[in-house]
Length: 323
Length: 291
Image 1 (cartoon, one colour):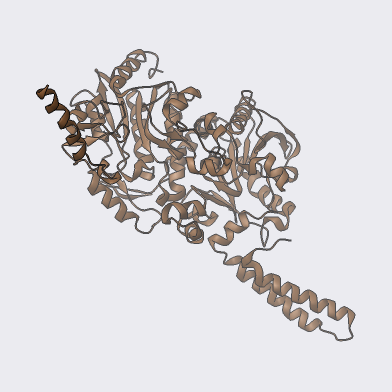
Image 2: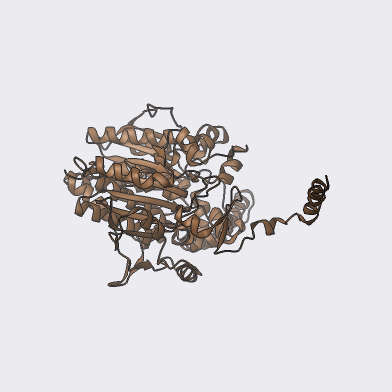
């Protein structure tokens, strides 16, 4: 399994334990006491490392090549996912997957960014960076969900909308703007979950809903740490510093009042056990849908408006600081 | 014959005195009295240029326009009532050096933030307005810009009047991070609310309208217009060139380019702006806003 830089001490210790175990089984010397001690130390080390992850560690985790994608979670969370294609105007964008399925027996519409799981697939899916037709496919299926009164679940996992010539010509800006606008008015429950990277407007175009959840090690930001560093300090090498200053982790967004709940991750990251991770998502998703489905349609839209209206930090001369 | 010679002799003299100015000197026209067009290099009196709504007499280049000048050029005299002038930036992420930058721009521009909002009339037709000003932090959108737009839209809903916005913005305000991203959702939701109540929304994109602003309210008018030559787009030219590894055409992401791609209703010259807005307000007097 691919390891990350900050996990190196854990890996080293694991290797040492494995070595000792191997040695014990092949020679006469009994080292089980030593091994037991080391395993205790490993547990403590893991606690220390995974409980004190820096924002930059989380960025690495969110970008982990083995991190479960939208389709991985769909296979664990939903029954009978039926993928639907096309925006009915231009084409089908493989960077967004969308379809209908059953969730605990109930019909839902599921939409998500889809990264490739290898280079070939990544090229086909433009690395999970959608074109306008992807967003328009998503919108078409959201309106369909609204018509048939199905809750919508959006899984967010993109570096951002695709920066290309054709994307601009076909109205990348308008496609993102239109999704934000229409999602604000949907009369069915909309739940958005950031599962990996939430990159800027390209993420937000699937991200306006009644609830926003983030996996513990996912990120959500207006620009990548590299981009921010290049823009603010003219040095992309300062990405680590930017990751800290920009407040992009799940705990950061929770404290800013943007994220409703953080979904805990399997120890060491979601990629260690996608099935278990799906269960952890399920634990938060199911009650949220239940709760939202009990609400009146107009109340749903009004509360969604209020939710976004509250976000921001500014000073007001008459009433002082507000946030 | 002698007289003719006199003239021919003077010609080379003139050439002798001509000097080739350096690149810096070319741009160096005293500020204040005279201005040089950055596009066609025509030199014009600043006062004349102001009278011409900051449009070059030579090539029609549209200079960036300050929010207050735009208000003066479009609205009925004395009709503008500013909203939420007391809102100012609070550095919500405690971003280093942010307050200093804001203070410097406040001093430079005389504005509190990158936008002025309010209600007023054009030829007697009432509307709520928002004017972005690119001279303040490149018109970037932070919490204050998002909140002021949202409140102006809410005022339009309350008064059952249309909403007209002039955009000029480099996009999201980096120093407010994800909070600035969320202003796209906030303003978009406000536009939806006004639209659902039958309200007219007009967006006029001016130079530049890019990134998060172009990907939210700027593109959400019932009518989307742009000023000639304005740069409008989602991703930056350099990033696109790096991604697709090809050189982009000169006119890429200009208003005219977008019109050709079907992304705009019209490109409007500044000289016809008031007349066209007035016509739209006239046409939508009944029906729109009365549901």
